[in-house]
Amino acid sequence: MTAQHKPSLSIIDTLEWNPESIKQANTMLEGSSPEAVLRWGFGNFAPSIVMGTGFGPEGIVLMHLVSQIRPETIVFYLDTDLLFSQTYELRDKLVKQLGIRFERVHSGISLKEQSVRHGDTLWANDADTCCHIRKVIPQRQFLANYNAWITGIRRDQTAFRANAGLVEWDYANKMVKLNPLAAWTSDQVWDHIRKNDLPYNELHDYGYPSIGCWTCTKAVVTGADPRSGRWAGLEKTECGIHYPSIAKQ
Ligand code: SF4
Image 1 (cartoon, helix red, strand yellow):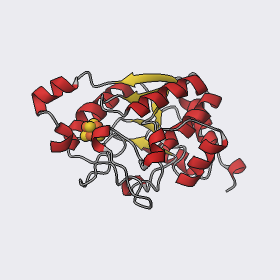
Image 2: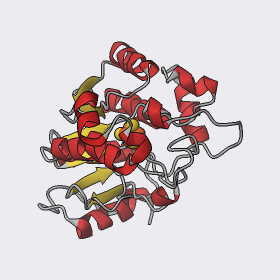
Image 3: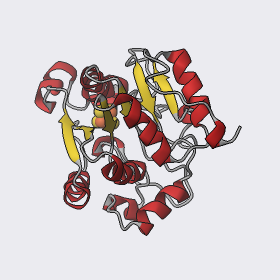
């Protein structure tokens, strides 16, 4: 079935979104461009839709598209208090260049409080609990106010992400999740960034293909798995905000 002959699936057709109707929507959207997925999402869920970012290259591409399609969209980020200074600098450049409306989401628990409760370096002793406290819980509380969120995950990033839909049901948050770049490659992402002269985290130029908290991110050698610098030495590959990787979900 060609794109133009696909049935339309809108809020008029489906008053209540659920895992089944979202599966149908994903089938309909498969093969669509990121812009088309975003337009579909905004058409059905705005204003109850937000974008989340960890400031990776995929997020930059999406922020660029979002700024053109629905500039008033709120883009939230999880401030763990442990982000690289270069990440905060990138945030400020994005405000300047693209006019992004950022919202900082924080656990409300300072690093000092965390060390009193769990020791000085929880990320080294129990990274799952650290991510749960500083990322998963605050994100869950924030997303409870919305019906849909947009993410930059791609299918070839990790085994967990291999089956990501362009749109899917987020069981953990009981809402709709859009992954407009799910089918894109890393090369497509970087082509878009260069072609549109978009800012990116300068650490990417120093061997950090994937960047999270400075405490859990290492540089990798050329040709290594781009995410191998995240939680290096642990089996952990996800912080838990996209796919439950920990028992505490
Ligand atoms: S990435 Fe590391 S420091 Fe950041 S929240 Fe997770 S375990 Fe804690």
